Length: 328
Image 1 (spheres, helix red, strand yellow):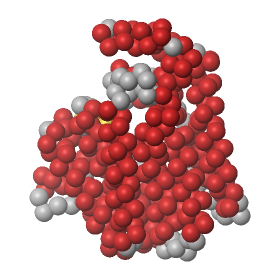
Image 2 (spheres, helix red, strand yellow):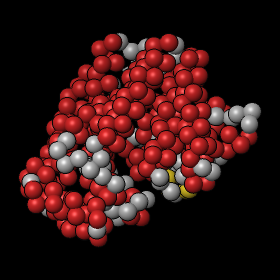
Image 3 (spheres, rainbow, N blue to C red):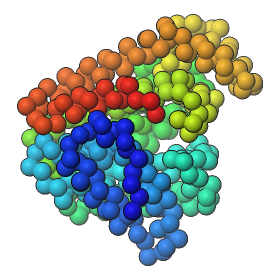
């Protein structure tokens, strides 16, 4: 069976039962994505077997430690959120015309865009099916609402491609929908599955939302400071595709028209990406970007004060630090 490459995050989440349950999540992901049509099974399991950090199901498993630890339900909750995430990746790769994901060909390249979309749809449907079996209507509704938020965030991002005027406020709406909403739901679903109090559900959800925002800002920083080997895509790729990340919005506010002119020139001359990256890597832009990340980090840490006496409190704080400091 495939072993997920999670060596870095394993140092952060050092609770043995989480990793035991993660093995069950891996088994269930393969079990529930088997179709009567082997062709569809191969497409649906393509990214499952390619691996990944499995951050979202890990969050669900951690949240499940707050309540009564009904592991059958918690594991299915973790499987459901990962299936939603995987389905969204298939669709994202079609939208972005991506060729690589997790070190392998994307489904739209290995097969074609139509089959990639159908594979993503199948995974989404299986997420609802898994949730409905043990978790109930509330959880199915939560997953449906979250997927709608993902779609709204993705649509807004496409609508505002190459838009220099959208601003940080609009960027944050996109991030909350496209990235943070599923991490929030990953936490909330684990809490629901473990029969937590409504107060604990709200607290862990707020942790997940703010941690999700930190996760995306960290990605934005990596997109301009890392290297192609670690990223799995060219450095500055988001900017080249017209997806303006937080450092770009900060530079637009700080520098103004001359930076707008440079971004306009970049659309015609891709080699100008190096000039753009030099500006975005400046101490001023990076420090202001990290300042916003740290504001949400603080909100995330504040949300989990309720769990100070819990076995997962220190781990949740370590995850926040990992999100800020991670190198890929």
